[in-house]
Length: 179
Image (cartoon, rainbow, N blue to C red; front, side):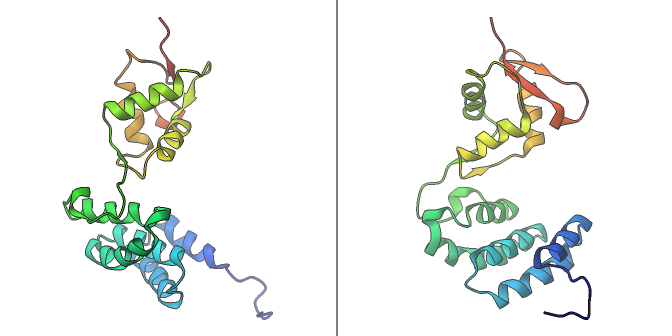
């Protein structure tokens, strides 16, 4: 332990600072160094793959994650990073040799019905984050974020009572429209 400095950053703090600054180049260097120092740490490898994708280094992501996915596919390791890289390269999920079938949610009738099924037994309105949380637990990958989900769902007023107190999408709450 170094007692000369009264305060040193913990491992995660410098990562967080760079992420919040959106300093993707520096964060890439930091995570690459950590991944190189800890080759058996799947979390370090996965975080490196995430920042590779943010920096649009999609081929490098696939080179890094594919062998790790093949060894750890039963836990779902690397699916999101692989899909982000494939989509970044203009490819689809069908352009990868998956070990097991993956489930991808898109903004379509399947996702709409999952939202309806979740909200049906609920008496009170639920916010977008809660609905999104349920969806990500029902799939290996969601091809949308919370904001796009909110935009999609508010376009279905025939199914939902929509409470929108502000323009901020996270404030939107929905419940099933009762007849």
